[in-house]
Length: 280
Image 1: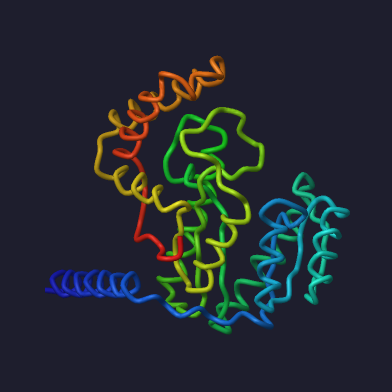
Image 2: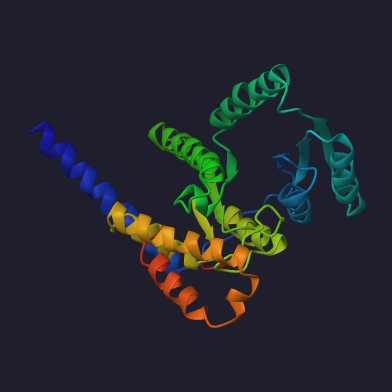
């Protein structure tokens, strides 16, 4: 009898969340104000971290900047202050165990409990779509899978504890144009500014997951319906095409274009997602 009651409650919860998320897709959620909020940004010395610092400042937030490079971090702070924002800089060396432990203790033991106590806050994890499915860049994918796993565990824990005021957002962009990857990509890399703007849109409406661009939602969704063998075969084809582009620079602009189309179709048939954002 208890089992049937638990099953009934679970089904009601599932129906409720499906309906709620369906409404969120149809009706554009209101953006929340963040003026006066304190925002901690790690890796703020450049790249996406610097852009996020500037974007949060535009919305009136006060930023705390963490980075290993103190000079770059100060440059970010200068850009923030030039626009009238408030910034506080701290140098954090991730290669120093003591430094990491000291700042991790500050983050976990000070920030999160205070968020729970006040039932207010927002945790944002910048990962990658390569943390949701693989393309044979195993070292990069493994690190992103770890980020996704950490974020999901934390988000589920907050939900289980019914801490509804502390929101979480997992940002999974496609390859961002930072120069990390030198291979020819099937889709053009994302502009950093575009990536940050789409992420900010998701943060301001408390969207749990945002994949950028929207096409990558299809990859995530189909991953859960196709067999592993098909996934590996299609991803292998994509890797072979990328490998071919390295050693034959002209192949991407000549006759083998049909190969890219086939690869796109096959890859589209086998990779990740949840409900897409209306903002991208």
